[in-house]
Length: 94
Image (cartoon, rainbow, N blue to C red):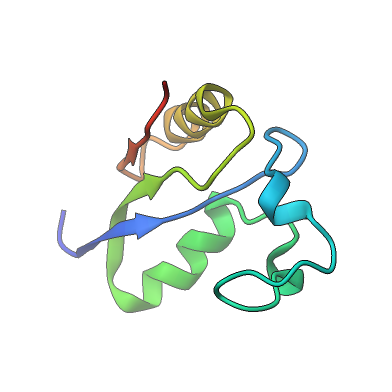
């Protein structure tokens, strides 16, 4: 494989995993207004944005799901369904 690895990205499917911090309407976050990202952000969109930069693989970082294990399982299902995109994940399931 020739290309770069994005060592820190997030994906979310709001129907599959619940993210309380993300879905709190009207609540400013440390990064500002979350309204523009209060929608699904899936691997297809990430790949289309990453490819022009030469990114060919990635590491998903957990992003504060209500249930970290559910998020880890969902991310693994995405990785399993896309074997042409090498994706590892960093999680902190307790």
